Amino acid sequence: VYWTFGFLRMGTTGLTAQARGAADEPELRAALGRALLIALLGGGLLIALQWPLRFISFALLDGTAEVEALARSYFDIRIWSAPAALANYALLGWFIGLERARTALLLQVFLNGLNIALDFWFVAGLGWGVAGIAAGTLLAELSAALLGVIVALRYLRKSRKSEGGQWDWRRIMARAPLLRTIAINRDIFIRTVALLAAFAWFTAQSAKAGNVVLAANAILLQFVSVSAYFLDGFAFAAEVFVGKAIGARDPRALLAAVRLSGIWAAAMAILISLAYLLSGAVIIDLLTIDPDVRGMGREFLGWAVAMPIVSVWCFLLDGIFIGATRGPEMRNASLASTGIFLLLWWALLPLGIDGLWLAFLLFNVARAVTLGAYFPRLVRGLQV
Image 1 (tube, rainbow, N blue to C red):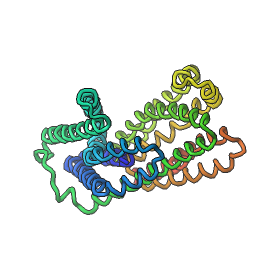
Image 2 (image 1 turned 90 degrees about the horizontal axis):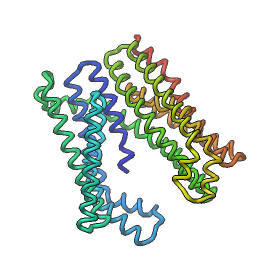
Image 3 (image 1 turned 135 degrees about the vertical axis):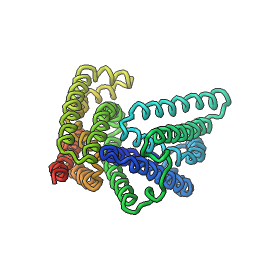
Image 4 (image 1 turned 180 degrees about the horizontal axis):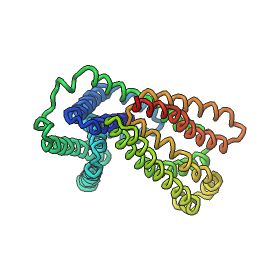
């Protein structure tokens, strides 16, 4: 549930980078204020709706009574961290938009380190079990959110134009920028749901093909996820530099940011694909001991090898359009790409699992093509 609110991170990064590029310090402060307001309201809504959320979630859970009881225990505690969890997304996006990636990283290290320490204490020391894990995560998220706000206020107080770090509620609640913030986050949310639907469909079709195929594809999807973490780093850089260029209304800076991010991202994608080509079989063997799954994983390894080189462009374009806060374009491109993926899956059914992987590969191509089609308009908008 919390992961679907990742739009707060992305939307906040773009808006903050643009305010920074425009040298609009009051808007820098207001961007964080609006993001935290949405986080608190969204978190409060999740808490208020916890009963229907729990009912729906566990109605879909196909597990034993014991597993469901443990999951309910975790849910009932973890849900209370919703405002803090969403606030951490907002703070992360704000610090990235400020080009303070080190601060964002340290906050994440603090959150995860404290979470591990508390989990160990509550579970191993006090014997609280699953409830201890949930309590540890709750306290870690609350602590990280509080620390993040303190660090943000200290940053704002150091700025001459930040009015002592105080938030101007009239500016935060100003109709036009507030509606823009809501619209951007709404569109990114729809974009995220569309992408999740494609991944869920891929997994569902893998499951229909049997346990061996499901397990093999799950391992290969880990290859895809790991490459995404590396490539997302360049997308994050594109978000910041494109946002600054948009804020400064500088088309040359925009093109330079895209060119530099693209070169480095492409180089990284090639290196990742080479690493998978040379060591993919060994990695598969490390992740499973089942001989059938190992064999199936090797059979389809080529798709995972090709994925970084193909998908790097959709990741990069995501970063560009997040930095430009072009929500409608991202939403429309993702919806169109998901539709294309489903059509390709249907057309390639005779190819079996290879057809499924080919459709998934072309899904990433479609994401890049549909977003790339909007790029000339983005550049022209700055040249007017």
